[in-house]
Length: 173
Image 1: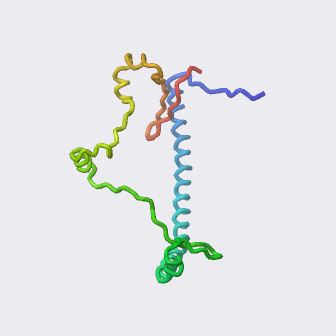
Image 2: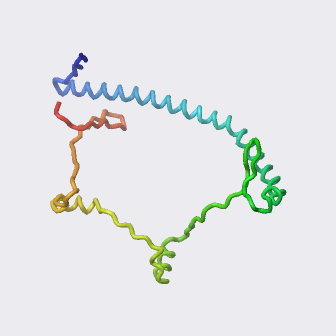
Image 3: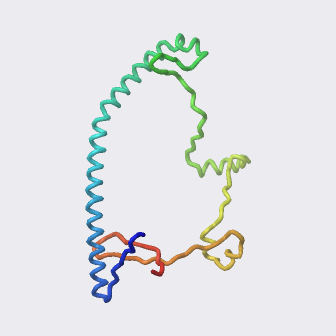
């Protein structure tokens, strides 16, 4: 049978202040450990990038050389453009056409032009529920089936000199 944890409860405001001091101390210890971890992770990332860079440079050079070869011999490699991929025992290379992509500059003016040209079929209207409006008229909104409002009370602890707040859902103990 699991042991029941006994939780200390302050008996006065002075003891509550001591609880807050200890919470701050524990949080600072956590922050120190996390800061040390972040420093180590940054050091490892920096070293890994330094280790990876020469490999990436070599790959770029090899790809550039392979491309130059392939372009110079494209007709024979693709059998007169009848195939796009060259298969070798060590891998494949080839050419591929990307799917069409739409690029837009100055969306506002494009929208105006589409409207003026009667091309509204190229304009999408997104219909969605306005949650802010629902919150402004709760009494009406909650009469709609499927709409409910969630709200709960939180207990907030913020030790002095720390940016962190410790928040728990307020439940009766």
